[in-house]
Length: 289
Ligand SMILES: [Zn+2]
Ligand SMILES: [Zn+2]
Image (cartoon, rainbow, N blue to C red; front, side):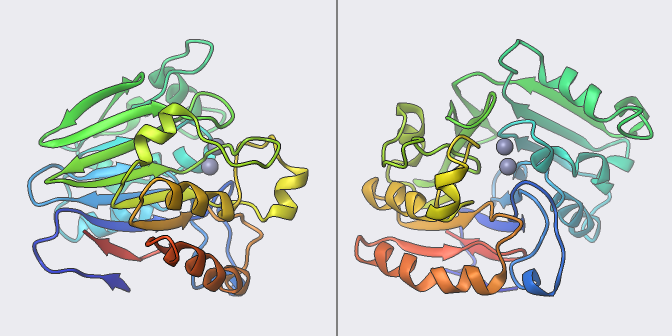
Protein backbone atom coordinates (compact mmCIF):
# COMPACT_ATOMS: atom_id res chain seq x y z
CA UNK A 1 0.00 0.00 0.00
CA UNK A 2 1.45 3.36 -1.00
CA UNK A 3 1.11 6.05 1.60
CA UNK A 4 1.97 9.47 2.88
CA UNK A 5 2.55 8.41 6.46
CA UNK A 6 3.22 11.29 8.80
CA UNK A 7 3.47 9.11 11.89
CA UNK A 8 1.36 6.79 13.99
CA UNK A 9 -0.47 9.69 15.69
CA UNK A 10 -2.43 10.59 12.55
CA UNK A 11 -5.83 12.19 13.17
CA UNK A 12 -7.24 10.78 9.94
CA UNK A 13 -6.24 7.65 8.05
CA UNK A 14 -7.87 7.92 4.64
CA UNK A 15 -7.99 4.91 2.29
CA UNK A 16 -9.28 4.96 -1.27
CA UNK A 17 -11.23 1.78 -2.09
CA UNK A 18 -12.78 3.00 -5.36
CA UNK A 19 -11.73 6.07 -7.36
CA UNK A 20 -13.58 5.62 -10.66
CA UNK A 21 -16.64 7.56 -11.78
CA UNK A 22 -19.79 6.46 -13.61
CA UNK A 23 -19.30 2.70 -13.90
CA UNK A 24 -16.89 0.06 -12.61
CA UNK A 25 -14.36 -1.06 -15.18
CA UNK A 26 -11.48 -3.45 -15.59
CA UNK A 27 -8.50 -3.99 -17.86
CA UNK A 28 -4.74 -4.02 -18.19
CA UNK A 29 -4.78 -0.30 -19.01
CA UNK A 30 -6.34 0.71 -15.67
CA UNK A 31 -4.75 -1.85 -13.37
CA UNK A 32 -2.65 0.67 -11.39
CA UNK A 33 -5.33 3.25 -10.56
CA UNK A 34 -8.18 0.72 -10.34
CA UNK A 35 -11.70 0.32 -11.67
CA UNK A 36 -13.99 0.33 -8.63
CA UNK A 37 -16.37 3.25 -8.10
CA UNK A 38 -16.43 5.86 -5.34
CA UNK A 39 -15.73 4.65 -1.83
CA UNK A 40 -13.28 6.14 0.69
CA UNK A 41 -12.85 5.13 4.34
CA UNK A 42 -11.66 7.46 7.09
CA UNK A 43 -10.45 6.00 10.37
CA UNK A 44 -9.66 8.13 13.42
CA UNK A 45 -8.28 7.16 16.84
CA UNK A 46 -11.41 8.38 18.64
CA UNK A 47 -14.54 7.85 16.54
CA UNK A 48 -16.44 5.21 14.66
CA UNK A 49 -15.26 4.65 11.04
CA UNK A 50 -16.59 7.11 8.48
CA UNK A 51 -17.16 6.25 4.82
CA UNK A 52 -17.57 8.55 1.88
CA UNK A 53 -19.98 6.87 -0.57
CA UNK A 54 -20.98 3.25 -1.20
CA UNK A 55 -19.64 2.50 -4.70
CA UNK A 56 -18.24 -0.88 -5.69
CA UNK A 57 -15.03 -0.18 -3.73
CA UNK A 58 -17.11 -0.78 -0.58
CA UNK A 59 -16.96 -4.52 -1.16
CA UNK A 60 -13.17 -4.45 -0.70
CA UNK A 61 -13.38 -2.29 2.42
CA UNK A 62 -15.85 -4.88 3.74
CA UNK A 63 -13.34 -7.68 3.13
CA UNK A 64 -10.73 -5.72 5.06
CA UNK A 65 -13.15 -5.17 7.95
CA UNK A 66 -13.75 -8.92 8.24
CA UNK A 67 -10.07 -9.47 9.01
CA UNK A 68 -10.62 -7.44 12.21
CA UNK A 69 -14.21 -8.22 13.22
CA UNK A 70 -17.34 -9.55 11.49
CA UNK A 71 -19.34 -6.72 13.08
CA UNK A 72 -19.14 -3.12 11.83
CA UNK A 73 -20.56 0.04 13.38
CA UNK A 74 -20.00 3.18 11.35
CA UNK A 75 -21.47 6.00 9.29
CA UNK A 76 -21.49 6.63 5.56
CA UNK A 77 -21.69 10.19 4.27
CA UNK A 78 -23.42 9.62 0.94
CA UNK A 79 -23.13 12.38 -1.67
CA UNK A 80 -26.04 11.24 -3.86
CA UNK A 81 -27.88 8.21 -5.14
CA UNK A 82 -26.32 7.60 -8.57
CA UNK A 83 -25.33 3.95 -9.20
CA UNK A 84 -21.61 4.58 -8.94
CA UNK A 85 -22.07 5.78 -5.34
CA UNK A 86 -24.58 3.19 -4.10
CA UNK A 87 -24.01 -0.13 -5.86
CA UNK A 88 -21.64 -1.56 -3.26
CA UNK A 89 -24.12 -1.47 -0.38
CA UNK A 90 -25.66 -4.98 -0.69
CA UNK A 91 -22.15 -6.45 -1.14
CA UNK A 92 -20.78 -5.05 2.13
CA UNK A 93 -20.05 -8.34 3.90
CA UNK A 94 -20.23 -7.04 7.51
CA UNK A 95 -23.98 -6.53 6.90
CA UNK A 96 -24.32 -10.31 7.15
CA UNK A 97 -23.69 -9.94 10.89
CA UNK A 98 -26.91 -8.93 12.65
CA UNK A 99 -24.94 -6.79 15.12
CA UNK A 100 -23.69 -4.53 12.31
CA UNK A 101 -25.17 -1.02 12.28
CA UNK A 102 -24.48 1.16 9.26
CA UNK A 103 -25.89 4.67 9.34
CA UNK A 104 -26.20 6.30 5.91
CA UNK A 105 -26.61 10.08 5.79
CA UNK A 106 -27.42 11.56 2.41
CA UNK A 107 -29.63 14.03 0.53
CA UNK A 108 -33.38 13.94 -0.01
CA UNK A 109 -34.32 13.83 -3.71
CA UNK A 110 -35.51 17.03 -5.37
CA UNK A 111 -39.06 15.56 -5.53
CA UNK A 112 -38.98 14.89 -1.77
CA UNK A 113 -38.29 11.15 -1.96
CA UNK A 114 -36.47 9.99 1.18
CA UNK A 115 -33.12 8.21 1.16
CA UNK A 116 -34.80 5.08 2.59
CA UNK A 117 -37.30 5.07 -0.30
CA UNK A 118 -34.49 5.42 -2.85
CA UNK A 119 -32.60 2.43 -1.43
CA UNK A 120 -35.80 0.37 -1.04
CA UNK A 121 -36.23 0.83 -4.79
CA UNK A 122 -32.59 0.20 -5.66
CA UNK A 123 -32.20 -2.95 -3.55
CA UNK A 124 -35.33 -4.93 -4.42
CA UNK A 125 -36.68 -7.13 -7.25
CA UNK A 126 -36.52 -6.83 -10.17
CA UNK A 127 -33.34 -4.71 -9.80
CA UNK A 128 -31.82 -6.91 -7.08
CA UNK A 129 -32.67 -10.48 -5.95
CA UNK A 130 -33.80 -9.55 -2.44
CA UNK A 131 -34.97 -6.50 -0.53
CA UNK A 132 -33.13 -4.65 2.22
CA UNK A 133 -35.25 -6.41 4.86
CA UNK A 134 -33.40 -9.66 4.02
CA UNK A 135 -30.09 -8.16 5.13
CA UNK A 136 -29.31 -9.27 8.73
CA UNK A 137 -27.48 -6.09 9.78
CA UNK A 138 -29.21 -2.77 10.46
CA UNK A 139 -28.98 0.03 7.90
CA UNK A 140 -30.44 3.28 9.09
CA UNK A 141 -30.99 6.04 6.55
CA UNK A 142 -30.93 9.64 7.73
CA UNK A 143 -32.18 12.36 5.38
CA UNK A 144 -29.61 15.12 5.63
CA UNK A 145 -30.22 18.72 4.56
CA UNK A 146 -27.57 21.46 4.58
CA UNK A 147 -26.45 21.08 8.18
CA UNK A 148 -23.64 20.67 10.67
CA UNK A 149 -23.61 17.65 12.97
CA UNK A 150 -21.29 15.35 14.90
CA UNK A 151 -20.23 11.75 14.35
CA UNK A 152 -18.83 11.01 17.81
CA UNK A 153 -16.20 13.78 18.16
CA UNK A 154 -15.86 14.46 14.41
CA UNK A 155 -17.55 17.65 13.20
CA UNK A 156 -19.36 17.26 9.86
CA UNK A 157 -20.56 19.95 7.47
CA UNK A 158 -23.00 18.85 4.72
CA UNK A 159 -23.74 21.30 1.91
CA UNK A 160 -25.65 20.99 -1.37
CA UNK A 161 -23.32 21.31 -4.34
CA UNK A 162 -24.04 21.54 -8.09
CA UNK A 163 -24.21 18.16 -9.91
CA UNK A 164 -27.22 16.46 -11.55
CA UNK A 165 -29.97 15.86 -8.98
CA UNK A 166 -29.76 16.41 -5.24
CA UNK A 167 -26.10 16.12 -4.23
CA UNK A 168 -24.12 16.89 -1.11
CA UNK A 169 -20.47 17.61 -0.48
CA UNK A 170 -18.97 17.07 2.96
CA UNK A 171 -16.28 18.42 5.22
CA UNK A 172 -15.13 16.59 8.34
CA UNK A 173 -12.94 18.09 11.06
CA UNK A 174 -11.13 16.72 14.08
CA UNK A 175 -8.20 18.08 16.13
CA UNK A 176 -7.86 21.05 13.76
CA UNK A 177 -7.48 18.80 10.68
CA UNK A 178 -10.01 18.82 7.86
CA UNK A 179 -11.03 16.72 4.85
CA UNK A 180 -13.42 17.93 2.15
CA UNK A 181 -15.11 15.44 -0.19
CA UNK A 182 -16.74 16.69 -3.41
CA UNK A 183 -16.86 13.59 -5.59
CA UNK A 184 -19.23 14.88 -8.28
CA UNK A 185 -19.10 18.61 -8.84
CA UNK A 186 -20.50 20.55 -11.79
CA UNK A 187 -18.12 23.19 -13.10
CA UNK A 188 -19.86 26.30 -14.52
CA UNK A 189 -21.12 25.04 -17.89
CA UNK A 190 -19.38 27.77 -19.86
CA UNK A 191 -16.11 26.20 -18.67
CA UNK A 192 -15.20 29.18 -16.52
CA UNK A 193 -13.92 29.07 -12.97
CA UNK A 194 -16.43 29.85 -10.26
CA UNK A 195 -17.76 28.11 -7.17
CA UNK A 196 -21.03 28.01 -5.22
CA UNK A 197 -21.16 29.34 -1.65
CA UNK A 198 -21.80 25.83 -0.30
CA UNK A 199 -18.84 24.28 -2.08
CA UNK A 200 -16.58 27.16 -1.00
CA UNK A 201 -17.51 26.62 2.64
CA UNK A 202 -16.49 22.97 2.35
CA UNK A 203 -13.13 23.42 0.66
CA UNK A 204 -11.77 26.59 2.29
CA UNK A 205 -8.35 25.83 3.81
CA UNK A 206 -8.91 22.03 3.82
CA UNK A 207 -5.92 19.85 4.68
CA UNK A 208 -7.13 17.31 2.12
CA UNK A 209 -9.64 17.87 -0.69
CA UNK A 210 -10.93 14.83 -2.57
CA UNK A 211 -12.44 16.26 -5.74
CA UNK A 212 -14.09 15.26 -9.03
CA UNK A 213 -11.66 15.32 -11.99
CA UNK A 214 -13.68 13.38 -14.54
CA UNK A 215 -13.11 15.26 -17.78
CA UNK A 216 -10.38 16.63 -19.97
CA UNK A 217 -11.11 20.15 -21.27
CA UNK A 218 -11.95 18.59 -24.67
CA UNK A 219 -14.48 16.20 -23.09
CA UNK A 220 -15.98 18.95 -20.95
CA UNK A 221 -16.63 20.99 -24.08
CA UNK A 222 -19.10 18.32 -25.30
CA UNK A 223 -20.36 17.09 -21.89
CA UNK A 224 -20.59 20.39 -20.04
CA UNK A 225 -24.02 19.63 -18.50
CA UNK A 226 -23.22 16.12 -17.28
CA UNK A 227 -22.53 17.25 -13.72
CA UNK A 228 -18.74 17.07 -13.65
CA UNK A 229 -15.62 19.14 -14.14
CA UNK A 230 -12.08 19.02 -15.46
CA UNK A 231 -8.99 18.15 -13.43
CA UNK A 232 -7.83 21.70 -14.18
CA UNK A 233 -10.96 23.04 -12.47
CA UNK A 234 -10.26 20.86 -9.41
CA UNK A 235 -6.75 22.31 -9.22
CA UNK A 236 -8.19 25.83 -9.51
CA UNK A 237 -10.63 25.13 -6.66
CA UNK A 238 -7.79 23.84 -4.48
CA UNK A 239 -5.21 26.50 -5.26
CA UNK A 240 -7.57 29.46 -4.86
CA UNK A 241 -8.97 28.27 -1.51
CA UNK A 242 -5.81 27.42 0.42
CA UNK A 243 -6.17 23.64 0.15
CA UNK A 244 -2.99 21.83 1.25
CA UNK A 245 -3.45 18.47 -0.49
CA UNK A 246 -5.67 17.68 -3.47
CA UNK A 247 -6.62 14.12 -4.46
CA UNK A 248 -7.91 14.04 -8.03
CA UNK A 249 -10.80 11.56 -7.91
CA UNK A 250 -13.76 10.09 -9.87
CA UNK A 251 -11.73 9.27 -12.96
CA UNK A 252 -13.63 8.75 -16.19
CA UNK A 253 -13.97 5.02 -17.03
CA UNK A 254 -12.21 5.69 -20.35
CA UNK A 255 -9.14 7.23 -18.66
CA UNK A 256 -6.15 4.86 -18.79
CA UNK A 257 -3.34 4.75 -16.24
CA UNK A 258 -1.01 6.20 -18.84
CA UNK A 259 -3.39 9.08 -19.56
CA UNK A 260 -3.64 9.84 -15.82
CA UNK A 261 0.15 9.76 -15.53
CA UNK A 262 0.52 11.99 -18.56
CA UNK A 263 -1.49 14.79 -16.94
CA UNK A 264 -0.12 14.31 -13.41
CA UNK A 265 3.18 16.21 -13.70
CA UNK A 266 1.62 19.36 -15.18
CA UNK A 267 -1.25 19.42 -12.65
CA UNK A 268 1.18 18.82 -9.77
CA UNK A 269 3.38 21.69 -10.98
CA UNK A 270 0.42 24.08 -11.11
CA UNK A 271 -0.56 22.99 -7.59
CA UNK A 272 2.99 23.28 -6.26
CA UNK A 273 3.28 26.85 -7.50
CA UNK A 274 0.44 27.70 -5.10
CA UNK A 275 1.67 25.50 -2.25
CA UNK A 276 -0.77 22.66 -2.90
CA UNK A 277 0.30 19.02 -3.16
CA UNK A 278 -1.71 17.54 -6.06
CA UNK A 279 -1.87 13.77 -6.59
CA UNK A 280 -4.05 11.27 -8.40
CA UNK A 281 -6.14 9.00 -6.17
CA UNK A 282 -5.65 5.29 -6.77
CA UNK A 283 -7.28 2.21 -5.32
CA UNK A 284 -5.49 1.11 -2.14
CA UNK A 285 -3.78 4.45 -1.55
CA UNK A 286 -3.60 5.43 2.13
CA UNK A 287 -3.16 9.06 3.14
CA UNK A 288 -2.64 10.14 6.74
CA UNK A 289 -2.97 13.58 8.22
ZN1 LIG B 1 -20.35 9.72 -9.63
ZN1 LIG C 1 -23.33 11.48 -9.97
